[in-house]
Image (cartoon, rainbow, N blue to C red; front, side, top):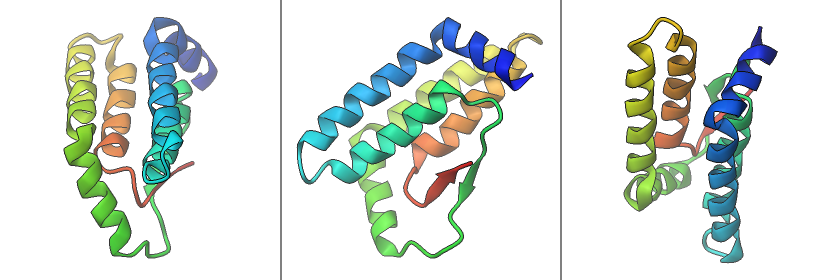
Length: 122
């Protein structure tokens, strides 16, 4: 079932959304300071390619205060707008019964895009 969901997701915009994350991640990785943010964009992009069957979890080992600082910078640098976009699309998709599984994936992406540092994708 997750294969069918992932294929439908890719056809109806998931591929272009992931492509956007990869382009932004590459742009961040050009600078030395932006490499941690670029790696997070790549992590979000990979989850955006195939969200069905994947899970977002907190890391088991402590990540320290650096991940908190990076999450704050991420939120102010545009993470809030990305998360709001996923929230809006998730709410719009949740209106219809057919869109509920896709809305759940947008809500999963929302939790990752709001504060990606200190989280892992399984």
